[in-house]
Amino acid sequence: MAFELREELDAREDVDLLIGLSGGTGSGKTYTAMRLATGMARALGQDWFAIVDTENRRARHYADFFRFKSIDLTPPFTPERYTEALAAAAAKSRVIVVDSMSHEWAGEGGVLEMQEAEFAAMNYQDSKKLLSWVKPKMAHKRMVQRLLQFRAHLILCHRAESKIDMVKEGGRTVVKPKEGLTGTHGWFPVAEKNLAFELTVSLLLEQERPGVPVPIKLQEQHKHLFPLDEPITEETGLKLVEWAAGGAIDWPARIEAAQDLAQLRALRKQIDLIRAAMPESARAIIQTSFNDRLQELQQRGGDQ
Image 1 (cartoon, rainbow, N blue to C red):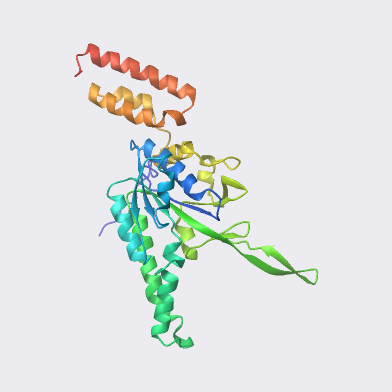
Image 2: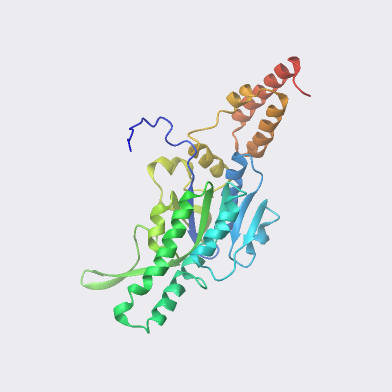
């Protein structure tokens, strides 16, 4: 097989995003995930998003605020069942929220319980404890590989738990919030530790400032997309989709390229979904472009 080295001028075009939101009770995980998903879906021309709900239909508490379609995922929370639910959602939607992903690790029938069942089947022999992790970890790895292959933007909500370190300072033991690559401020997602490294972005939400992100993993190319001093909004979702598509969407160019009134109306419908997240100056430019193109097509005798 011959290999070819090519220059990737548009390497970021149509990238799928894997976003992690973690937090304790009252941190605004679900609400923030839905705001983010709403902006992303609208930017893609879809007025609803999908949610895989493991929280006993708790997503329905937000039905007055957001448009979504849900899949109820009930125990056992095995990696295989998560994969099946996500595949069903990805077949219909380009934006999916999973609330919560933590059940796959620590829920009923999740990886920890799978390992415990394997260890029990080995009569709790210490010499076989490592072996008892093989099947559960392989199932988890297969699920992660599928996550990376879905043609959808995924927002994974995780419960977070506080952890501490006992360290020696000046000859005495001091208790400090634990720090690490997969958590921050002493809070860590309830998840398999390596999952964090597969995420495009990983953020912690705190009870003191619901919806305001604290970076766990936020690389340089993503820093401008997330406000760190105010809550995540639908506008953040719009910016993320634009970034994943290769840059800000040139709406006037798309309007100019419309070949008939049907295409122009379809563009207008998509733009209307995200108008609220646009600066006023951008709205004015787009409106002028739309009016000019509409007049041109009508004068040309396009379909009415």
